Amino acid sequence: MLGEVTITLLQGFGKTLELFALTLLFALPLGLLICFGSMSRVKILSAIINAIIWVIRGTPLMLQLLVIYYGPGIVSHQQIGFTNSTRFLAALIAFVINYACYFAVIYRGGIQSVPVGQREAGKVLGMTNSQIFRKIVFLQVIKNIIPPISNEIITLVKDTSLARVIAVYEIIWAGETYIKHGGLIWPLFYTGVFYLVFSALLTWIFNKTEKKLAYF
Image (tube, rainbow, N blue to C red; front, side):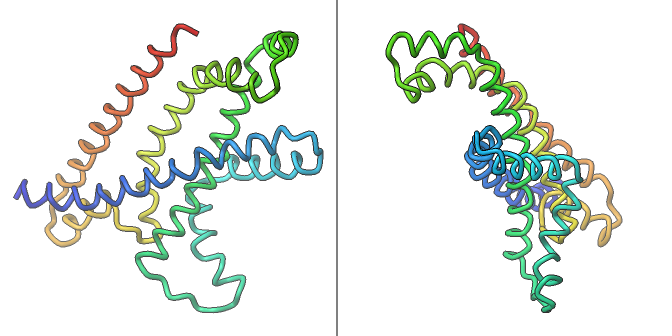
């Protein structure tokens, strides 16, 4: 029985990992673009982007999932046929937008934490703005943002379970099926082992990374 449950949960965890990996793949670079937009000297652009960040960070991710999932059909007044792929896509879009906004704020804090004097010193030495960013600012920003970024990424591992509210099959869903069909609750608790092991692995990786950047 344990082997059967493990295989089933591994299948669900595979979908969890897929959502996790794709969210990071798109949210990390998108967050950087949003960060630069929020710091833009064009006031209208920065005001709009900061307003979007405020809304996304101020509302629950579950609400955003439901809006993105049901929104297109409501706006177009058409019945949309939902499939496993469209459900997953809706979940991915919601997660990417949500986490990109959080990453943007972290990026902005990391960039602003680098003393202005260091940039001015780079200009005195005749360096261009791109050279100053690559050789002076970038690595310090990476060091400063690793702790908050790691917290958000570990939170993302657990937040993927919210995808089940729009019927995306993931590990919690897989564990819950044993309650409905077999009256067994222990597989649901067993899912926690997967989260704990994966979170521990990520924590170890981030701790190693922080130590390597400690010389800055």
